[in-house]
Image (cartoon, rainbow, N blue to C red):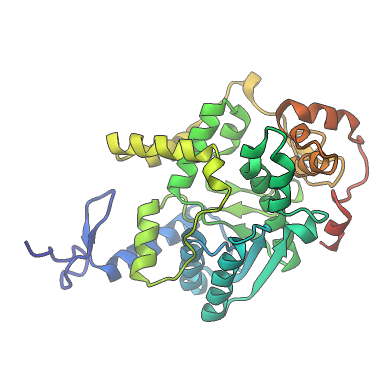
Length: 344
């Protein structure tokens, strides 16, 4: 049976049916529609004002590659400038190849690129070193917890280094739905309350962040990369198989098979979530050590680094944070958690 005609241009043969709508489109019309939807997300959400200097979190993977390509195409309409910021977590046999992909993209698209490394920012700590430190503590499955917190801080420092006014990341709808599920399963009301919307406004001096691909499904991100012939790094992180996110991802696939709208339903549920006053997290303040935004005496990055530096990584997670916070100076100076952070 021949392929139907594209429902948009009515001339070319359709190459796909959109996973959600079932609309039959050729590759060119699908990519145009995808870009138009991202443009609408940015404009409707007022995510990036005209003249913004945007730091694009670049990992070399499909999401950040598609995000950078789309924003580069939309930059003239949005009147923004882009700067790729990549983070070297120090994962042997994995990150070097991913960074090579980022450097190739930057050269091909003529975009400036800055790479910041955990080792330089966090007193010599790399993710491989963190993994060795946590291996005997019963916390080996927490590598992604450490990496997520430190990566967020590293991206913020890299963005400030290049003079960015905003940060964008490539989280898609499936990523966000997994996060909502994880927070429900862990009973984390605080993160659920902060998880709605398309980003954060930049409280307490932090740079505003947004997720222009948050309403795009993972399937369509992959399809866009295919039809635009984008090359990206596709290997999974060596520490990912131990992450709790994998269980949420498996559950989400089962939910989506039973209810195709499950992904977006979860994303929108986080936007509409309202907590009772007694369950609301405290208003964020400044970390007593580094001055970064924090919901407790120490920000999560400082708490994690303290635990690692003491050789007791479990202190930095869960109930172990109480001991660290009791020792944290109150109303102290705003200095980074390690001397190497003073460069930023």
